[in-house]
Image (spheres, protein in one colour):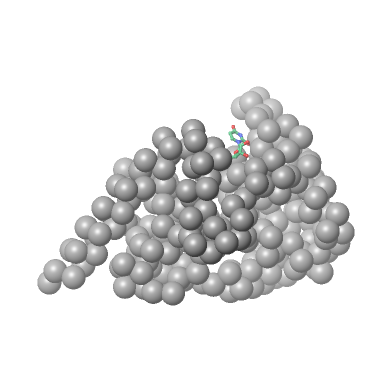
Length: 241
Ligand code: UDP
């Protein structure tokens, strides 16, 4: 089932169900694209038809952040589980380890994807990784594509930041069984960005912690109150016969 939030249809899969879909795709050699949709992306898609189509045409759209979970509840779908990019990959790695999957990490500053992959393989040595940083020029792109195709990944993790990673994945289909836009997850996996302590995550205040640690994010988070207003407005119209 999917819930419509400002025109973006978010899947109601739990984390376990999302991971199961991914496992089945890898084992069945299907091709699926996963978008982890956060409130900023959903808000931006209201004014950008192209990104809206890209997100809605993904095979799985997860609720990346408590703002999306809140919006779903306001719009009549309680109990949606938060499935962020970083939590998704953390849950996926033990399964990838058991299945001996091949994972390509594309994105992040030079050296970061490598550091992230090393950390992952240290704990999950069944996984084979290849990496490429995310600051390549259009001239370098054929080489990047060649490197990914040659590696033949089961899973392609693209951390170029949203919405660039969504455009990039839609422009280059068929590179892996499962392609996932993971934003800044490599920075977290590499230990460059430290996630909020579990207690803060449980209080649903990770966004505030992130803002404190990376104050430049205020420019992006400034759309959050507008997202809230738009969701309340959508709920109001839905209730009005
Ligand atoms: N990034 C990249 N290439 C670029 C611009 C950004 O690989 O041209 C990476 C950047 O290094 C960071 C990620 O994209 O690792 C974006 O992280 P951010 O936390 O801003 O993304 P979000 O998770 O909020 O989408």
